[in-house]
Amino acid sequence: MPQKREIELEPGFVQAFRLFVVTRIVFWVIIGPILIVMEMARDETLSLEQATSMTLVERLTLPNVAPVIVMELVLLALLMLPQIPRRMGKWFVPTTLTLSMIPVLIGNYWWPSDNPFQTPFSIFIFVTLVLIAWQYPFRYVLAYVLGVTLYQAWLTSPAASIPLSADIGWLVLQGAMMLLVGYVIVQLVSIQREQREALEAAYERQGEANVRLQRYAVALEELTISRERNRLARELHDTLAHSLSAVTVQLEAVRSLWEFDSVAAQDMLDKADETARRGLTEARRALRDLRASPLQDLGLVLALRDLANTAAERAGASLALHLPEQRLENLPPDVEQ
Image 1: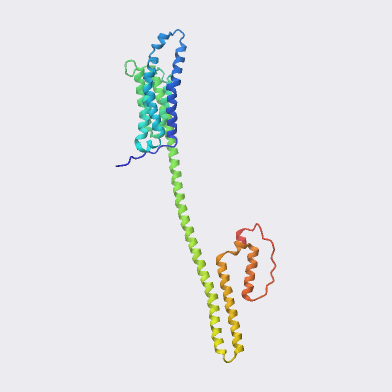
Image 2 (image 1 turned 60 degrees about the vertical axis):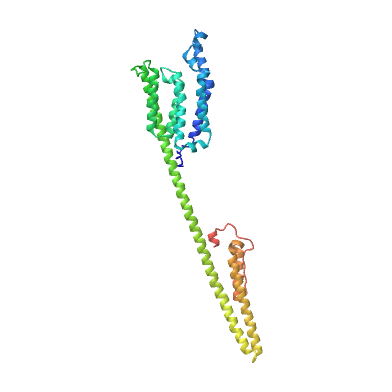
């Protein structure tokens, strides 16, 4: 079964749409009746019988308003459930916007006015325009403004045709304002979308650069380890090979001299022992250098002291060393190295 293609929702669109629907429900239940009462209270000569016979009051009764409120609640449920946009895919936004416009158009029909700015539903019409411009290109805004203007012109025309009167002037002014507002919102959203895409591309490039940097760091680490192994191999070869070769030659000499000159053979055996011990010391030093970095572990002063003592031991010389007892502070790493 083919999956439905998901439409990319602009950030904050669903949250703003949800707040808009909640506001309209409050209007139908609370604000609308209050405005009707206030409008009837302006005419002191209006009797109760005349007030109840008004077309607006008849239309905004509970049996008539209840289906509209149910439609608003269904729309709110669609906007509240997080799995609905994924299931509806590309049909989520047009379906919810269509359901949102139906109560607005019904309310505009129930609450007509010669001046479209005097009806409270003009605010809802403008908010719906904002939502359309927030999510769609300008051609959808143009279609919405044209449809709303023709609908309101039909409502203000007693003959159900567009008259050439002052009412058309208000409608043209409203349409022009809606087009201007819609165009500005479309441009702002377009700029925001381009900036977001550029930022996502920059994040992607940064991620690729991080991957390359990690690979370079791993390669550099492997190269450093390989170089250190080669250095250690050379050092161990130079130390052990030389020491073992010398010990082998000296032991051969001991074997040859043992029967003829035991004193010389004993002296040669002592030299072989010294050579073997010196080679063992050199091997241990090389292994110690491999395990730790003296400069990082001991600090500059102790590392210099250890290095000088090691060199003196290798050379068999006496050492007179004068260094500060305390560790040197605030030295840059390159100076210590």
